[in-house]
Amino acid sequence: DIVLTQTPLSLPVTPGEPASMSCRSSQSLLDSDDGNTYLDWYVQRAGQPPQLLIYALSYRASGVSDRFSGSGSDTDHTLKITRVEAEDVGVYFCMQRREIPVTFGGGTKVEIK
Amino acid sequence: EVQLKQSGGGFVQPGESLKLSCAASGFIFSNSVIHWVRQASGRRLEWVGHIRNRVDNYATRYGESVEGRFAISRDDSENTAYLQLSNLRAEDTAVYYCTASTVDYYYGLDVWGQGTTVIVSS
Image (cartoon, rainbow over all chains, first blue to last red; front, side, top):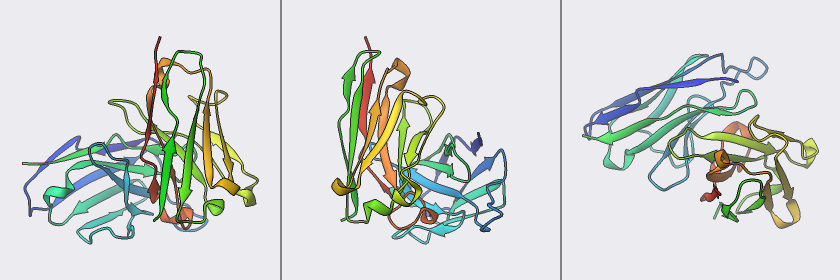
């Protein structure tokens, strides 16, 4: 199974400041057949199901603020928030769907300082 | 409105069975691959399995921890997917989510059910 390791575990942020988190995969998530990297980012707010933010490494899902961006390579992936707002608190997960079984990272908890 | 509405869940004893439902609306359910994901308290999200669409002969795949005990099915005429949980164990205690891609799998899992809790305890 592909293992996803997220860092940091906890990310205290100041409103208005940028934030960045990492997700490292144990193997490449690049599908050489179609050229896509199947790494997504989700946020889960308290008591809510996960919500898709970024799909295929770097594409924002519909309705997601342009403050969020995804980038990376085959195995190192980053989610950035340009200016954190109070509503951004939650646990951010990466998920790979390059291979079955689909696997998730352990999450980065974003909280306001 | 695009949504998945879940039902079922509850408190059961080890070895018992339970069936969860996931009713879709607002998108073409019959085209979608439906996934089930669970989240035990304090643990990371775990993929349970998926069922593909008619074009792919409704093929199913499961995570190793539930293979042979859980079964996913769907009724496209009712826009509903199901997760049959059998021979339940304490470690199956979790919140279970159904999720899908409303347009195409390329675009990620963009719709999630609200989650339903399963507690397995004697």
